[in-house]
Every structure is written in structure tokens, then in C-alpha cells.
Image (spheres, one colour):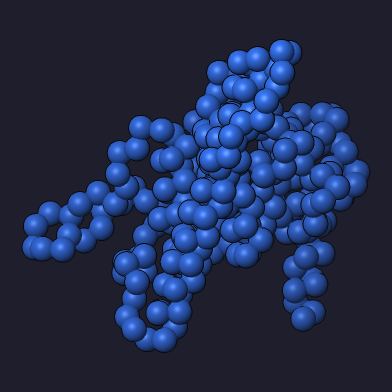
Length: 265
């Protein structure tokens, strides 16, 4: 490490501390980028091995209803299966590990479920981000860098695999993250999340607002499903629902147009 620059009488110890923090943060970001590159290399190598017929990788050895790494991997001997995911005390490290373990298996599931997994992970990352921001200056620079790496990984996955729009990956969009996570986990398991009427209403209001994000490319089928579901939880005169229906139309009419377009292909 190069010597810290002299700050003169006004810099003092506080200036030196800030410089050291910046160096630590920059180093942590580089380490996270390198680690993500190695994980990416392993992911590509696994796909090549599978395509070249060298046998299924560990990730594709069994079918799973969920790609989350909470299952069990076969043991090397004849004994009981061992847990796939180790116990990681830091929630950011645990989330990063879970994403790494599951990424290759995302290829083998449908787009709606893939989207639900991305939403669950992104919601957890946003919840952790809020907690780190609440800590202010007390938050570890390395933890901030680790969380940025998680967001980078999720954004890359969303671009490389057909996942659909993930609201939580847009920094301008916000929601009750615990409710958002519950809804995503319900979509993964195929069960209705346990939400109060007010939570469900606020959740759908946020999703309806997300339809108007300037970077979003509208998928008509997704809009149909969202507006139809939102109309069951949000009052008919709610501004967010009125805006969506004024812009995109009645969901049943939209569904009929989508079906007619598919039939014409």
C-alpha cells in the first residue's frame, strides 16, 4: 500500500482515516469484482461441460421445485446428505452465496419462476441496503461494497437470462421490502402470501406505479396479469389503478387482444 498523503495541519487524523476508508472500500470493490468474475467463469465452464456431454454438473444433478440452495447435496459416501449452504453469519454473504449456488439452475426453470427468484433476492438486498443506510457512518465500507456486488450480480443475471422486469433492481422504486419478499416467495412456492388487506393494497399500488418506470419495456401479458390481480386488492377509484387502466386498458380486453394476436401467428 502506498504511503498516505500528507494533509497538513487541517487534515489531521480524521483526514487520514477518511483516506484509509476510501482505500479499503476501493480494494473491497476490486476483490468483489474478482470474486464475481471467478464465479462467472465457473458458471460458464459448467454450461460448457454439460453441452459437451461430460456429464451433468452438480447443479443439474437433480430437479428442484425451487432453485434456492436450501436443499441437500448428495454426500460423497453412502451416508446422509449434507446441507448445500453453509451457515453464514453475515446476511449479505449468505445472500451472495445463495445466488451463486442457484444461478446455473435458473436456466432450467420457466421465466415466471425465474422472475420470482430475482424478485426475492433483490428484495432482500434492498432490505439490507436500507439497514446499512440507517447505520450511516457506522456501516462497514466492506459490507457496502459486498452489497453493491450483489446488486451487480442480480443485474447481470437479469440481462443474461430472460427474467422480465424486476422492480426492486430500480433504485428509484421502493416498497415495503418484507411484504415484497413474502409475495415473491409465495410466487416461488405457488402459495398465496400471508398479507393483511392493507399490505396487499400497498404492494399492488407500488407495482402499478412501477409500470411507468421510464426504462421499462412493457410486456402486455405481464401488464394484464398485474392489473387483473391489482383490481382485486385496490379500490376501483384508486389513482394508481385508474392510471394503469387509462393507459393500458381494461385487463380483460387486453387479454383478448393478446390471445387474438397469438392465434394469428
